[in-house]
Length: 358
Image 1 (cartoon, rainbow, N blue to C red):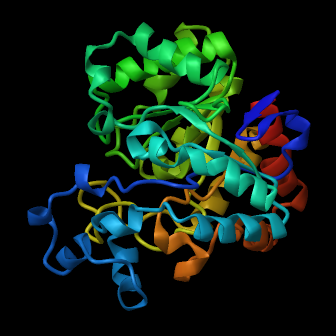
Image 2 (cartoon, helix red, strand yellow):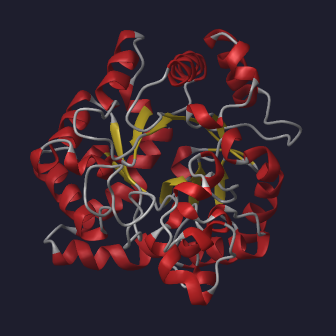
């Protein structure tokens, strides 16, 4: 059974599913960026609200805008979820952890789920080291794990509903001791509860991507990699030629989440210089389709899941973005363009998430 914010459902009832989304979130800009380090062209975005007049600049420097990352509006989220439902969507995996404002908004999830008839799975877990609650510093991995287990087996805060996925994340270009502690805790929680876990990774410099270290940790603890998915796998484009890192991760048994669909502008770094991330620009939907085709050609069609990572205002329909309905409405035609059978689209959005969460 799958824990949703309105109760448990059978995995067979999940239907089309996006595995990496954020229904509500608080901005992470302030713990990544200081105004004095922002290029002059973008510095005003730090405090300015997102408007029609600055949308292009925000898209070019999304992480410099605090307002872009603040997404707590119920009406805007219901518009997104209704459009998703109208496109055929049935389930959203909300991977927002405590460090991204989960506790400020998690009580809203049952309301929007009920209003839109979309299943929402809420997360336990944590984001990168810079975002961790102060208590984590003094806790052991076992103590952190017990907190996660409690949210899975008893409920999140006083909401009355249980978490159905474990979220972890690794700091860009390094694997800190705090990151490791949270990973160890997540492994303990996953092994005890059986719920899937995911790890947010980045477009790190070549050789710095921690994916294989994480897979090795999981294997050493006898974790079923069929219950683990790597988020943002498309950001590994620069790691090895011809999507080599993604293919090797799939071969190891992990699910691969291609989950930045619709981000057709430079989301890959703080601005459009990309010096921090070692590649020019963020992957586009065409890149994502090339990755899907490569994985299918290599025989790993059963390991692909997808999403939009809908964390920013500029992704929303209310701000001219492609919306949470983008994959279901627009990606099938790209499958045709790349000569990929539509049977694989069904497998990726329905069959694979059902097996991952079942």
